[in-house]
Length: 123
Image (tube, rainbow, N blue to C red; front, side):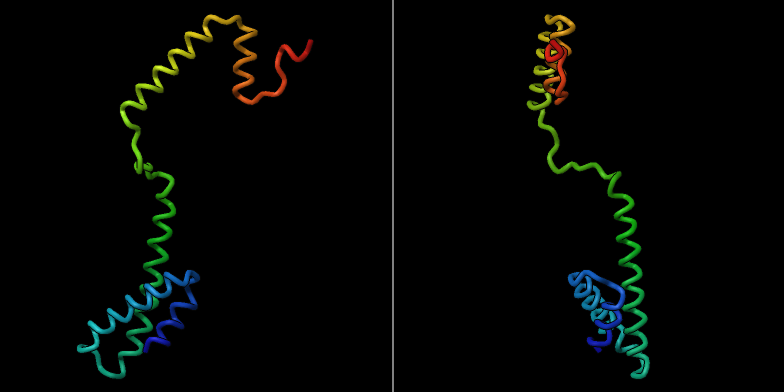
């Protein structure tokens, strides 16, 4: 039974890990339903179950891919001390830039933003 199920799944799925998972899931469902199936219905049941599992897996993957850009990555939230330090650095930079002339400020910002041509280079 397993080779038939594997062929059905392999014909529709590319990732080997997904193939193994889907075949195992299909075999598990087949073992649960085997007692209530007639002997001649076991193979067709296995094929239909494998197709349905592949279809469900593909739909789930598409939903996950569509929702992925909307999911916030909360793996490492900002620590409070990092937020405070970043705010202090921003205020210090703003105060320092305010003390410069407009051409000096433009040159420094161009340097840190990666702009190659500065106002002083034209002289």
